[in-house]
Image 1: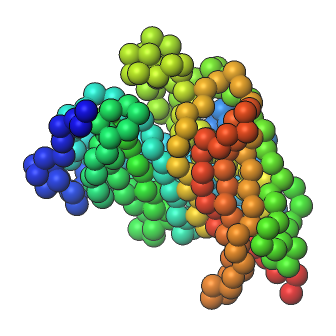
Image 2: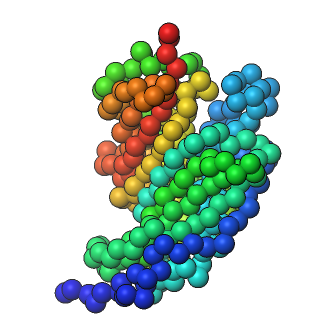
Length: 153
Length: 142
């Protein structure tokens, strides 16, 4: 049985809107907690002495660490898209890295609604939401672009 | 971890696999570390109310595991340029999952030695639950 479309023109009109910027400080302790959570013993994330000897000259953020900033940026864009469907699950994400992110950096992140699509699947009618989160450092230099796909069902 | 050089890898080179055995406790640690407190990852009733049969591993945690697969391989002298993952199937804690990768392309882009890899996660049954791509820049032996 085909279910009714949930992708209204009003929802589609939100594409391109952005949320308020958020500020996210890169903290050594938060990186350590993150590394422990993923059980990654790479000294680059936790050993100051080791990290100082690398070309980074200090501890840097691991690859998916900025997901925390993208979560905050999406929260700050809450009003940009409100799903008519109850549940959400992470459909996928992509990180593009322009520069290393260092302990002590302050990242500003802005979330934009990139696309809205609908599909029917195992979980019923689904909305596929694409968010684009741009991250810059305290010098205004872009450090990462994150594409986040959320499935709403 | 040793430095790997652009000359050391070819199309078809396999990335050393990485096995993880996430527990619900690990999912709680991830929730706290990353700021994602969605109950479907640690509260069984909430997961079932969301039409899931069990609590599920955060997609982003799986992406983090794929990130470790790659950073363990390239060492501190390699640079991760891009990392992406699609969560096609769900995984739940209490089981082994294995991250794998394979070089699919080598190319020079400006001054960078670029290596593109397919990366993915297999569950205990050998099914691929997560697919992804990693792009790295490697040093040259000169």
